[in-house]
Image (cartoon, rainbow, N blue to C red; front, top):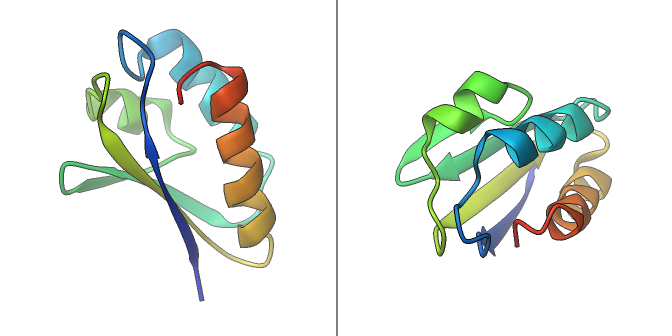
Length: 88
């Protein structure tokens, strides 16, 4: 089983390097496999290079997917962290 959530990036410059690094560091605390999907491409959300390689702009719809024993907590807390980082 897995848990997913769609979010819209609202930051004026998208998901850029500085908040992406903070987000990736935050995500590393979870044991689940966590991915980020944008424009048909999926990357490991625990990989800064992967996240930045997506070039996610403002108003982009992205999907966070977690699979593992803490998947529900992971998706919920990642969305909360994205709010704190003013990404969504």
